[in-house]
Length: 137
Image (cartoon, rainbow, N blue to C red; front, top):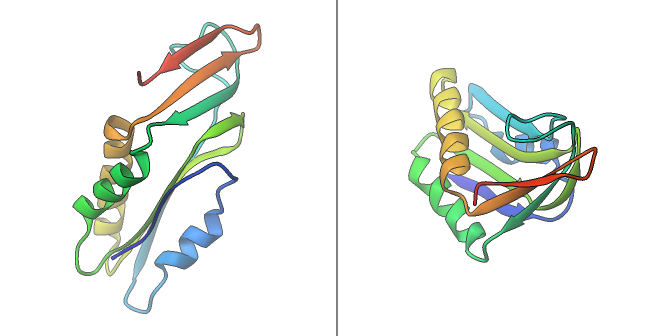
């Protein structure tokens, strides 16, 4: 069951994602929290912020990606942030609960990888010296 998919321009609430997938049949919950880090191989220096932008169809695409991973005993909640984020801020939250841990881990990882590869969200990295570069275009 898909309980939440969203593209958001406000701070992401990690506990709300955990609460959304909690249920009596869940023996496991896998949580992925992606945060902005201060470095990237494609950046020319120390990363100080990311500026995320999304295609108008990004929310529908995210819902489709989550639906493709859905199964009877799963609950999935995933949100990707857009806008300007500084180092340490949360860019994505993906929570998956299932009866067994292996499936929760597997689905969470696979969904995050699909989102990274297929979601039409792009980021502009800004470094301490003001240099910028786009990722995902």
